[in-house]
Length: 245
Ligand SMILES: [Fe+2]
Image (cartoon, helix red, strand yellow):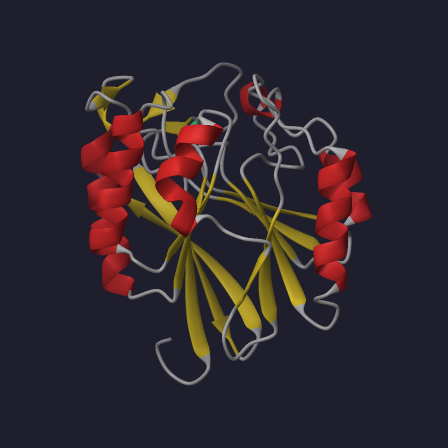
């Protein structure tokens, strides 16, 4: 909390660390440290990592992540992505795992986690059981503004190569949850902002490498960044921070 009525939430995503330093010729562990050090300077009230913590699901990747986060950003919560090994993730990051919801202190905002990971698939899918669970959670937060948090995007970002791997029933999910104010996701490895109905949709850049926007294939870009959401007087504003490496 910076002052009485301002709260900063950072969304960092897709660090893709592994049991080797380099993934796709990028020193991902070094990039993770650069981004986390940059976030630390903001002194955020909450940092949410939106999945693909690990690229290979290795024990070492989660151990390295856990150590770094404990040291630099203890106010962190994590969710898993399609690259994560769910069991190893839980084993090492259990204490950081975003529970059913997080209420932002002194505000009417709540962050609610939606599981979009379909084991064995790159694309996302929300099961009926998961949708009903989230509807129930939201029912207990009736008077609050809800920011839905998931790994996969629910609505096309407009880059064909990325939209192939969208949450396949994402639009139906948004229709069922059309009372939420904001949805934030990772997975797309770039910064996007759009709206669907009255819902603002934000995707955060990767902490490791980006996928070029508007490309028909997967083209890598080497910049890194993260999203900042400032909540002031119950009003949420968004900013993407880019860091050149
Ligand atoms: Fe990813």
